[in-house]
Image (cartoon, rainbow, N blue to C red; front, side):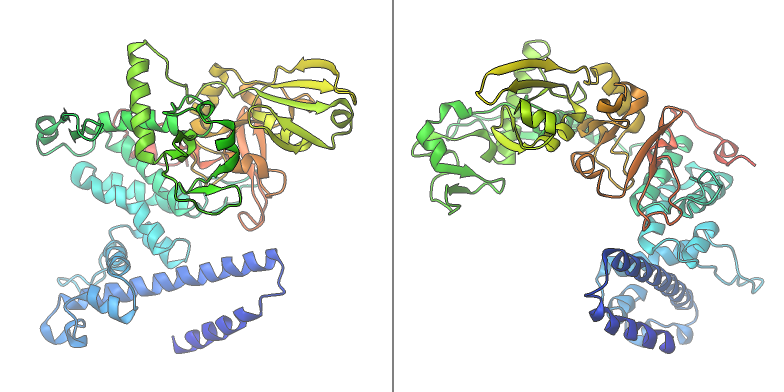
Length: 501
């Protein structure tokens, strides 16, 4: 261990000399350091298991009291110079991976999750990844059988090694992130234990309430408590209304209600601080400038939620006026000169925002929506107005959202309802506006797809991803891990979860 520490110290000192290394080299170094860290996690977990095992023996054999600590958690907190949460994480990891000596026979007993224990020892997952994977299984408790737990343990280990997504040559795919491994574990447990734990009582039914108080300081105070499903529905509606891609969020004071001079004198920042045109903070109240109401984008989150609720109630009374978060992509109107449009250079104007952008940016942005092109000549005369049929319909979009569930780039968990629909084969090159040619990409990944190293293709109507070298050194094509399948509402036998063969 001392020799290993000396080598690591030398590597750390060498880290100061990475200034001239290119991006590929730096990423490679980070990956190697991450591998070392996972190996250290495995060593620490094994040591914690030994300490915890001895702390349960006779007083003369206990380790933590001999070090002046109450228990192994305090020992770790002091020895590792870390926080209580991290120390407890190592203790939990040791409980599921350590093989205790059987007092009756003197031989080592089995670990609670032997396959995942081996994955940890091999440096495939970190302690955080191990706990994220086994957590849903532990919470199921006795609601699953020992046989089912063993099968799930094997499937989690197989997925952690990337064996669930082999490429066309049968080589393992990239290892999943901690979040992806946790999601897969939850899917497995939903199949085995669809009902979950039974509630201990009906306290929620008794405590549900909504109280509207008397008018005070211009508002009616509201108090009470919402049942989980009611709160979830309200949050879902707030998400739809607060989504930057949605245009239905109500405004207490529309921008048109601000005078031109007031709007010209003030710019608005997402941090909620009002600033003048030079960027300096002003002393004006957030809701007014010179006594006039200001545009909607400086509302606090609480104010937005209030206005959202007002719109929800109005829409309910009017029988359906809410914006459809999973609906069709918006139409983008781009006006350019005929010369710039033909050459693909120059600037384009995005109507509605007044922003000037390169023609290429406007064309890229329009991948997810319809475009109405207004062409002008050099004198400003309208040459022609044209439209394209590249818009995914609401039905197509809902189908793609259901299939992809979230942005298809691995590790990005932006819900598909918030994503744009990308033409895998460009529309300008004959790509059809069809579900077999559209995938969900978040705003960021859609606009950086050409330069980020990620590639998307469709195979048999299903998206496949090829990532940068740091993600998959083989550069193979893999299906996104969102395709583990929708949990079925019935109990799945353990043998049905086992991989074929």
